[in-house]
Image (tube, rainbow over all chains, first blue to last red; front, side):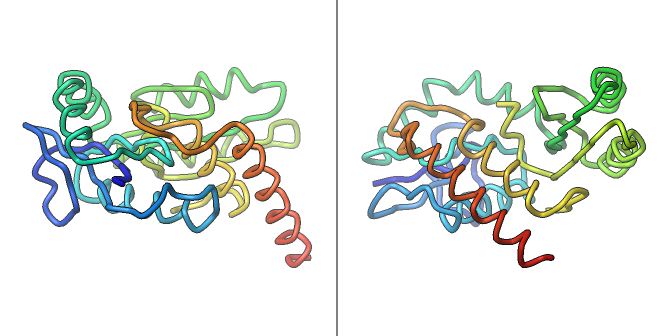
Length: 160
Length: 55
């Protein structure tokens, strides 16, 4: 069984991959599907972050498996155009998870969005060099009335 | 992972992303809805115990 962790640009040297054209899926041969347990979550995340450190990455949902490499290769070919475009959209960026609770929530979200390339629910896609500035802005909104948490940088799970 | 909030929040943010985010491709995704609920229950228990230890 093949577990799939990430889609990235080929050749993705140094990783175990299935390659088709310009795309590579980062995979592992596994005996069984990963269990929904903390160790398995962290193992998945570690692999995705290793790829992210080297090149643009589309994280794949936890627990995705295929019977064989051929299935993975044909998917890479089928969705090549879509995934190449997504990789371009996240290139150089990381995801920051932001939770905001309080009366000024919308104002805070709107201002933070101006520092981001894209925004989703509870997540912002931020160019890597701007992370520090973004986090500082998020922290500046904190008050007795506004609870703000910011974690990351994460692979772009919310922007794929 | 650089964390501006607590480690507990980071863990919840991560699990949220792993099971709700990421590219969905055909193939098999092992987590059924019941499993996801279990994960959250497990995570809450983990966070609760970590909080107790912290105090």
